[in-house]
Image (cartoon, rainbow over all chains, first blue to last red; front, side, top):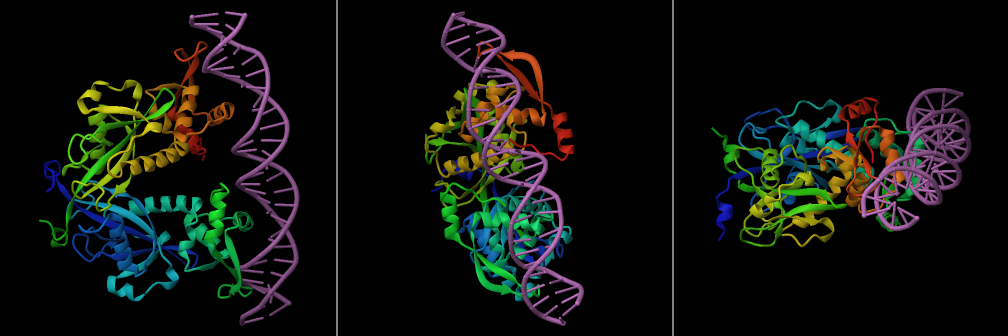
Length: 230
Length: 230
DNA sequence: GCAAAAGTGTTGTACTTACACCCATGG
DNA sequence: CCATGGGTGTAAGTACAACACTTTTGC
C-alpha cells in the first residue's frame, strides 16, 4: 500500500552508462560500442543499460560492467546523474554514469564480437551519442582526483605491475610527462608496495621488477595519519 | 513515437533532495524540515521534492531550492544519485542530491512557518530520514573540495564580507582552526579581492574592513595559469 | 658493442607552518 | 583605561622540481 504522496508523481526511465577504463600499450583506453538500436543506431556509445525494479543503482552498474567485461569486483565510482530534458532523443531518460577500472590484460576478446565492444584510445575518441562525451570528460576528472588521493590506480593491473608501467599509466591519465626519479621517490616514501624478485622482460632487455600493492601497509599508513598522494 | 527499446523498461520516481548550507554566527547551518507526510511523518528531513516530466534534473533542483528559500541564482552542485532498493520506505525512489549555498543574511523567515523550515547547526544535526545523513556527509565532503579549489565560498555572503568572517566560515566548514596570518597571506597573494573603505562594526569595536570578490581579477588570475587554493 | 629501457641522489626553490605584538574603539 | 577583536612580518622546516649518469641485456 503506497501512500498517495508518491503515486501522483511522474516516473522515469533510469539508465546506467559506464565509462570503462583500461590501460594497455602506454595508453588509456575506453570500451565503446556501436549502438545497436534506434535512435542513433550504429553511432559510438558508452556501455549502458536500463535499471530494473529489483536492483539498486549500484547493482545496475555492476550488472552493466559484468555484462560487457565478464569481470567481477570491478572498482567503480559514480560519476553523477544526467537529467537534461532531451539528452536521449528516444525518450525521457535520466542516466547515472559510473566509471570502472578493468584489467585489460585479462580482457575476454570474444566480447568484442558479442557486443561489438571495442577498446578506443582515449586520445582518439570519436563523437559519442547524447551527452556521453560529457560523461567521459567528467569521469576523467573524477578519475584524476581519485588516483591522486587514493590507491585505486592498482585496479588497472591484474595483480603485479612494474614501476615504468605505473608511471606510464599516470602519464596517460594526466596527459603529462612525469619525472621518473620524483615519481619513484614518492612511491618509495609512502612504502605501500612490495617488490617481487621477478622481472617483466617483454618491454625491455634489462627487465623491470614487478611490485604489488600491499593493503596492510596501506592500513598502517592510514593509521599513522598520512594520506595517499601521487 | 517511442521506440520499443524504451517502452519495455521500468520507470521510477525521481526525487531531488537539497542540502542547503548557510553561515551565521560563526557556524555552518543546514536548512531542515519536519517531514509533512507518511511514512516518517514529522521526522527530520532534507528539503526535497519529486522531479516533474517537463523539467530537467537541474531545473528540479532549482525549483526545490527556490521553493524553500525564495532565492534565485543559488550556487549549487550535484552531490550524486542515491538508488538503494529500500532507501525510501514509502516506495522505490531514486534521489539525486544537490547542495546549495544560500545567503543566510537575507533569509526570509516567513518560510520557516510555511514549510516548517529551520536552520540547524551542522554540529547538532539530528538523525534524518532515509539516507539523508549520508547525503549530508557526502555534500560536506564535496563542499570542502569545492571551496578549497574554486572561489565558491563567496556565495555564502550577500555581496561583501570581512576577512574574520571568511576565516570563521572556513573554520566552520573544515572544523579546524586556521592561522589568521597564514590565511590572510594566501588571500592577499592570490589578489582576488577588493578592499572597501567601509567597516563592519557589529562584531567588534575597531571594526573589520569589508571586501568583495572581484571576478575580473579571478579571470586574469586564471589566465596566468594559476589556480585557486585555500 | 650498441641501442634501449631500468634504476638511482642531490641541490636549489617555493611553499607551508609556527609564532607575538601593536592597533583601534566602545563602553 | 581596559577589554575585545583586527591587523601585520619573519624565520624555520618541509615538500617539490630540476637534473645526468650508470646498469643490464638482447640483438
